[in-house]
Image (cartoon, rainbow, N blue to C red; front, side, top):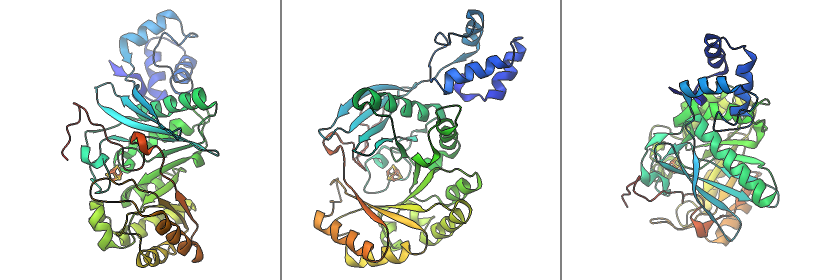
Length: 347
Ligand code: SF4
């Protein structure tokens, strides 16, 4: 027995040949799986009962289901998804006037342990499979339509986990989400956000993955970045710069630098100057992210964030402020954390 969503169209076609079924059946079944997103063979109504029975004897669906959801007073909806093995991850629907954004997870927990992030405290439990990543999008899309009567406009890999440490499954999910004959979302509507895995950034360029790229920069010098992101020790700013240059030379897409505003840590004029210097090196835009106090860090004051933004704008760095959403339900940036029996926490 095998998870049917782990095999390719070619493999499915070859299997059906062994059952004396014509090749077009494989395409029909594949459409049910990846275009209509069904989770059972019974739903494949244009497939004969006999063939559905054969499929059931050889394959199964490992699905991701909504375990719980919470709606914030600002309309943000946080989902706790349960995986087939009982583990849980989170996803978030963020509605704004212009956009409907799904923030999705790529791993259960995370191995990187950035000091301002709650997810890192969970440690890494496992990678998500590509179908589990796609299921998050399908559930969040359905809820967006149900609650707000609007489809998703953007998908960001900014939930739990480091996407480029689950490279193959993330890229496979990206292909299912964007293939015109499958979910068909525009590649420009997807953003893959990395804490800074230089090799993975280059690989995205080599594989011509057209999703947008965001780098969680969060500090403009190695000295400061080392203090909050241990990944910077092997992937320092020089190594990242080289990878980003390579990426830009091939993809010709600007890069977004995510910069979470931490009070008295990375929000001074000195930091703004260093960030301008770094940002001039590569075509980019900067998102300044409001941070919710957790443990050792406090979010910068609103006037400090505005002053920081103004400095960057005055120096011709396209910059915007990302307001924190879903704070009251712990759905905001850096707050995604599962606390239950399956994920014992060290605090
Ligand atoms: S910020 Fe991202 S990479 Fe860092 S610990 Fe959190 S989930 Fe992992």
